[in-house]
Image (cartoon, rainbow, N blue to C red; front, side, top):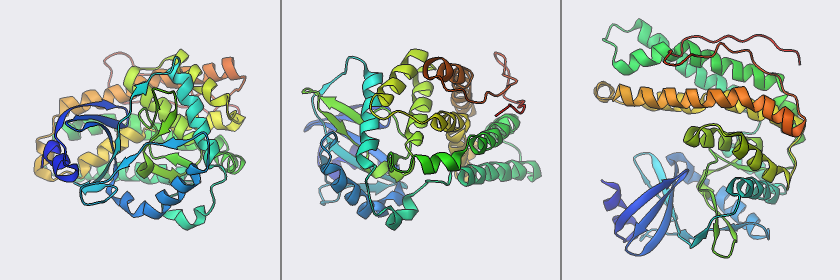
Amino acid sequence: MEEKELLQEQYGFQLQNYRVTGASKVLETDQGLYYMFEAPAGYRYKSKFIEKVRKHLEQQKDIRMLKLVKTTGGQPHFVEDEQLYYLYRGVRESVPENSFYASGQSLAQFHQATKNFSGEKLFIPYSSLGNWPSTWRRKLRHYNEYRDELDESDAELTPMDELLLTCYTYVHQLGEISVQYLLEAGYDKVVKETAGLGKVAYQNFDQGYMLWNEKDVRLMAGEWNWVLDMRARDLGQWLKAETKRNGWNDEAVIHFLDGYNSVAPLLTGEYAVIYALMLYPGRFLKLVESYKELPLEERQEVNAEGWQSQLEDELAKMEEGLRRYPRLVEDHYGVTIPQIDWLWRQNNEQATSIRHEETDQ
C-alpha cells in the first residue's frame, strides 16, 4: 500500500505534501500539520518502557512532549513492512537564533531530566548500555560472513556485490579500529562515570527529535526510538547525522557541544568515546544488512550506482570529521584524545586500504 493510502486508512486524513527533517517527516494534510517518525517493528513491545519514561518526564519542568496522535483504531502507532510508525500533531514552529547551540542545550536538558529515571533493570531488552564493543563486533562478523559467502558462491556477482567486495578491507578495518579505540578510550570506565548523568538516549539521534514552538517552548518527540544508554551515544550520532547531511562544519560542532556543555559539561573520557562512535561505520553496515535481507531477485534489480554514491558519500564526509575532531576538541576544550594515522583515500580512489598505527595513551 502506498504511504498516502496507508495514512488515510490509519488516521483519516488526506496527505497533500511532505518534507524530510532529519529523523522525521513533516506531513501537510487536509487536517493540518503532523510529524511522522518510524522505528523498528520490534519496538512495539516497548509500551511499558515508553509509558514509564513519559511519566517521568512529565515531572520535569524543562521537558515537554509533542502531542501523540492515535490511529482511527485508537492505537498509539501502526506497523507496516517491519516498521513502526507514529505521529504527533504539528505546531507553529520557531527557529532559535543559534539552532546548533539550542539543540545541544536541549539535548543536555533531556539527559538531565532522565538521570533519576528508575526501574531500568525491568527493561534490559531495550538497553545498549555497556554493550557497544560486543554489538559492534557482532555486526562486523555478519559483514565478514557475507563477504565469505560471496567468495565461495558460484553465482554471478551483482554490481552491488562487487561494490561491497571492493569496500570490504576499508570498512572492515575501520570497524575493527573503532572497537579497539573504544576499549582503549576506557569505555567501561566512562559507562560507570556517566551512569548518573542521563539514562535514556535515542536509537539514532538526529534533527527533528526536538523543536520549538512560536512561544519558544522546547518540545521533544520520538518516544518509540528511546533506548537505555549513555548520553555520549546521542552526541556522537548527532555529529554523524549532521555531517552526513551537510558535511563537517567546525563552527556547527563547536556551537552544538558548547550548548551541551552549558547545561551538563562532558567528562574528559566522553570525548574519546564519541570519537569511537564517529569511527564506527554503523550506517554503512546497516545498509549492507538491508541489502542482504532482500530476496535474490530483488538484489539483481538494485541500483548499484545509487547505492555506491550513497555509501561513498557516507564514508567520504565522515573522513573529514575524523581528521578534524581531535584537533577541535583539543583546541576548544583542552582535551587530548588519541589520534589515528590514516592512509586516507585520494579523490576518486576506492576505499580499499587503511593503515592504523598505535598511539601513546
